[in-house]
Image 1 (cartoon, rainbow, N blue to C red):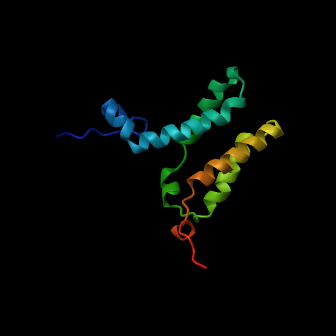
Image 2: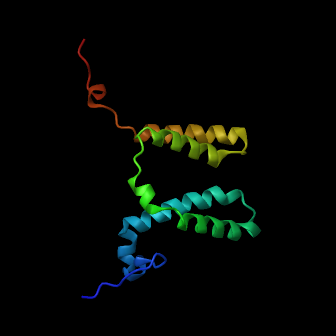
Image 3: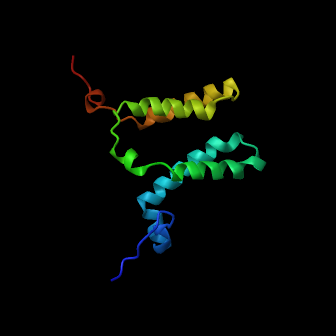
Length: 125
């Protein structure tokens, strides 16, 4: 079997059947990141959006994958990144709306946090 060679610009998911594409973790990750990018660009006027997306695409293509893949970040860095993401998304919006979104994020996160078994069992006094 001949394995096709791929350039940096080719998209290997084109070779996959559609059902396999949905299961591809690379594709799912890229789509999730693109949803965040599109959400962050909602403030950009429609007539400038194409230009912005082209600039972002060019910058993303120039990201050195080798440098990123070997970097180690402390686990706690995700806390700061998460807070920065929330701030960037909510920047410049109505304070009442921002507070409601922050409260809703906190509520949704609380629902995801597993409760330790020791707190679920009744303590004998």
